View 1 (cartoon, rainbow, N blue to C red):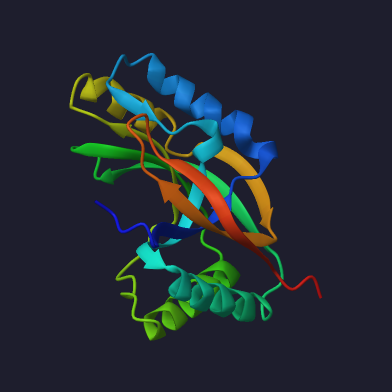
View 2 (cartoon, rainbow, N blue to C red):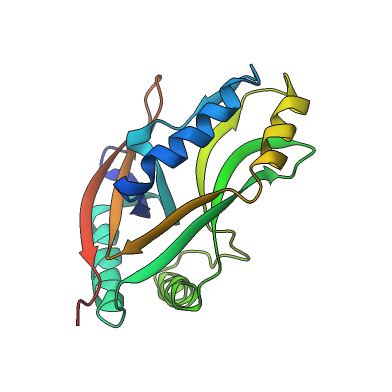
Length: 191
């Protein structure tokens, strides 16, 4: 059982509402496969920058101060959301995701934050494939059909979104799935 004084937390980017319909359309393409996929509900769709796990209020304050200070040096960043992929790979699909095109400003932000989080005792990311999880396969039922949809949508274009804030979120695990809520939001330098 989790200690009540600790919260399961992560740093995230909320999906721009203007892109939501296209993302939900991609999810719908998989329903025709009749595969056993648990789809991420609309209200839970997000890009995770860093998962912190169970942390206490003191650490939440340290993370918050660090993010606030870091974002002072960054202007809003545009992300091009596109492409579909799977983890760990196409032969053994566990997670279905939508990606983003490489963006040097964004990579610089990720690396800067990761370096600073390491100073708070968090592990540095070895490699990072920035993505938006849209579903998780529960078993290999109709795997071939799922692979076909993945290949059909590999180059799917969702659109561009401007990131002007990050959210530190709390994750409450429930039998019906996780419930995410914002603990704090941090704005980029509007300069």
